[in-house]
Image (cartoon, rainbow over all chains, first blue to last red; front, side):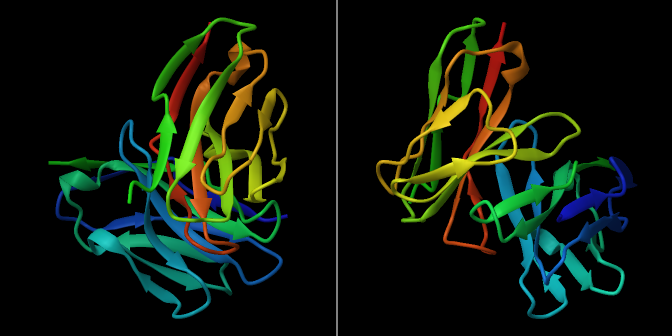
Length: 114
Length: 112
């Protein structure tokens, strides 16, 4: 069965420093992977997606993620954190059942300190 | 385009009451789904639909019903609310398998 593990429930960084949010997945086939962001009391917004094209995926707001099949990882990075990046981030894998079911990680709450 | 629209945004129910959460999308997506979000658990799939007239159960379907009479609408019905259904509910739609899902703003439901 497909699953997603986000390795950190909380990450705290200072404004202007790099961000790393870690995600490992398990899938029996080549997956579609996504990162979504959720700001407090808001819906979910797509940051970026991997669908078997380039392994380095660029998203919105300066975020990017690298798909590493050998490590079954899809970590999210940003070179320099901004206060507005404070939110909860979800790593998601799309599975070919349940009509494009999305399997969510438990989420990582990013705190950005001034 | 409005995208995915959910109503209401907030709701308080008494145990045993029923209600319908509304979801509409204007992107002509075939796939629609309902998720619930609980702290520390991410989002879990309740029910989904791959087209008008076609629905099926997800991971946590008990206590919920859905129907899909049109491409645009996918309401979620709580038959007899229980405190365990206190959660935030999200409706999502997408073109098809492996594609980006668009989410509504969510419905925060409290059952007392």
